[in-house]
Image 1 (cartoon, rainbow, N blue to C red):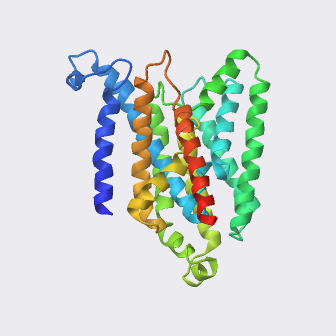
Image 2: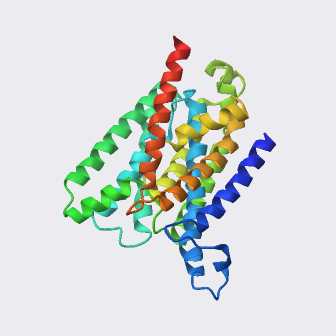
Image 3: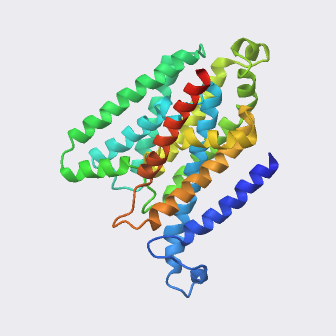
Length: 320
């Protein structure tokens, strides 16, 4: 386990170095000196973008690992809670009403959307801790927030606003600054700490809910911690980068053969691998030979769609 985590950290450092240098215009490392005018590209553009890629990837990877452990479903993804779509709806409303001019307003609306979805999820699911009720509540909220987002696009006051909304929903780290890092980092940190405390309870759940209760696990409390942790991490990720899907689905599956099937054992590797995946993907979309930069959310969907299909085929073969 330690070897796996150390290997991922080394790969992360290499990926971060690539991310800082990579782009339509490559910036060599000797441009760090203050006398070189290219240093501003590194400090003000590349470094915050790389930091956000690491944070967003880690948040989504960790959230996906916790969700798959909690729901005991290998196809679970942070989007299943409705938190991603709720945060997206909040950001879309800020664009729709023209409140995104201030740097803090769009992330603020996104986080408010995530918090509102979290509160509704807690109210609908109640204190029973029922996984079926919890999953259905998440699906309902995803459907409602998705339809409201589509409504906002169709009723956009100008074509420019509609274009802004659609572009933002595609997900990207373009033109991000240190202000975005300052907004996302503390929220993701609190959410990650909450999710990190669920490891023992998730291990107990693998034995079944009755056995977990006998081991001192409170399903209602665990559900609340999972909701709050995922809302903070995923909400902050959506606020910073828009909708970047499939990271939480793919990463736990990639690290599970190396870390083992115990849910607590894959939490940290999933966070590190998620950061690695998003950082590499963001570097590749920047250097891709396209006229305009490929959106990160589109690139992840192109990877995640076939991966999801592969998982379905593999599960069908195991059940046959």
